[in-house]
Length: 184
Image 1 (cartoon, rainbow, N blue to C red):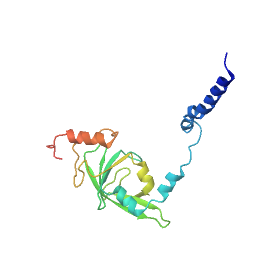
Image 2: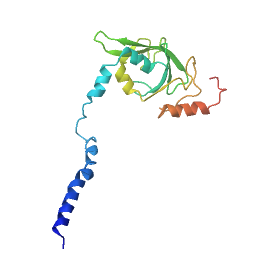
Image 3: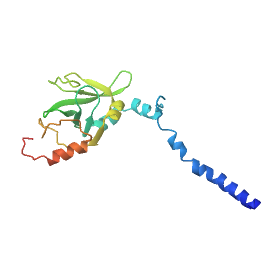
């Protein structure tokens, strides 16, 4: 037989523990639900819209990046700080030389523009192709500082990438494991 005081203590204990036990449920309520539209992301949208030319130059200059979006094969780029761009396409051994620049449209949109004089490949060509800077950075599969693959000034890769790499680290490992005497 329970004493009245024990029942009161038990009720208070449950009342106090309820928020602690139920507090974990909120983090699962944000998971996507099939058939329900995506939630707007105003902070991300704002950062894309408010990209500055200086931030775009810092974000691309002296960086290696993996691009798997758009037409054509996946691409690995090294963009120098002085506006040169070197790209290695999946399925090719040749490293293509091009240029990059930051442009601001009349309505203030900051864009990153790329071109490859003398090149006509799907997604790459002699004319400037521009994308909003913030969008381009969010759509890059991966980006890291420097030239770990030693693209700068090269015209040939050590080997042909036969499929899209899962990461830059995967390619860096393969490059490091490939002998130097292959005309690289």
